[in-house]
Amino acid sequence: MPDQEDITRLLADLGAGDDKALGELFAAVYDQLHDMAHGQRRRWRGEQTLNTTALIHEAYLKLASVDHPRWEDRGHFFAVACRAMRQILMDRARHSAAEKRGGDLERESVSEIVHPALDAQVSEDLLALDAALDRLEAMDERQARVVECRFFGGLNVEETAEAVGASTATVKRDWRTARAWLYSQLV
Image 1 (cartoon, rainbow, N blue to C red):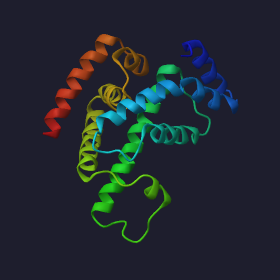
Image 2: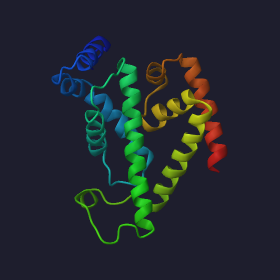
Image 3: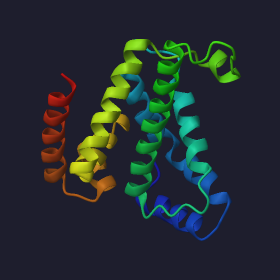
Image 4: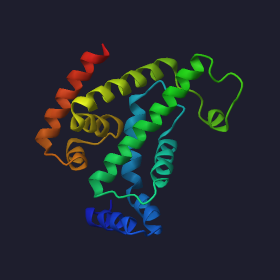
């Protein structure tokens, strides 16, 4: 596991325009990203089409496509990675929902052959959660970031605190409050 200073140095190099730094950064954090993606994959037991490695690689492609990324520190980078994983899963859920309504009858992409559509119920659940998270973000952005980090990123309380720039006590309180609010929205 690389130390925080190595990651911070790579982030600074990346911000300064060092093109090699992104590859080095991902190599340095790959195991942690793998753990995050694996935790995400365990949550969707019925959906086995997007495996851990594919989720990491899609997140990498999404993050690598950003021109001149300015990730402030290790925590900010992992918060952005959590958001990328959320967006990837939501895109898959939207695509599956469109297919359910017959929106993709004529074409079949290579990605759909490799990664078939999500189960209909998983898609609906993900889309409902995404809509509820958007509403939560409008009310309390930090609570929404905590949910992204904990749920979509699989980060623990300490890692989430670093990612959102808050104390562990605040993260615990936000996590408890956000879960209760989301539950009220989703039942």
